Image (tube, rainbow, N blue to C red; front, side, top):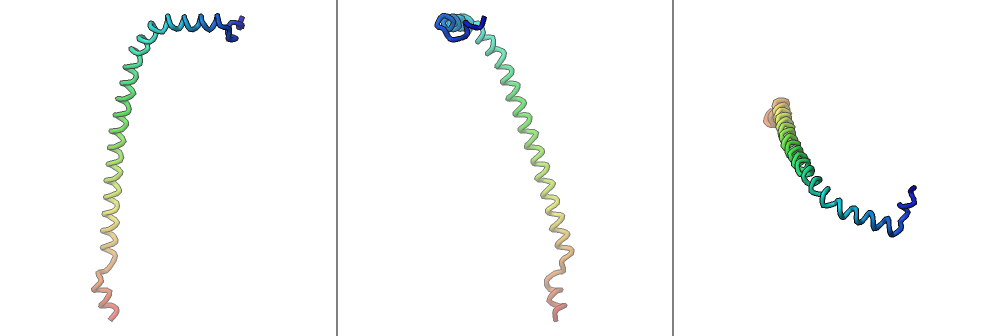
Length: 89
């Protein structure tokens, strides 16, 4: 049964000729189906990219806000340098 797959020339020729006949019929059908799939994948990638950029901008803004708050707290907790010098005298 599976002896025709063992690599004899007749089966190789039959497969090659069959592929040559079927390929012109199958390739256009596959390309018609592949184009919308490729476009959908590209659109999905663009949406993902834009969403990622927005989330990264939000995270950047949050870190900037936290940094500004921390600097403000440090400035309010640390006495001015003139007060330190007066206390040392």
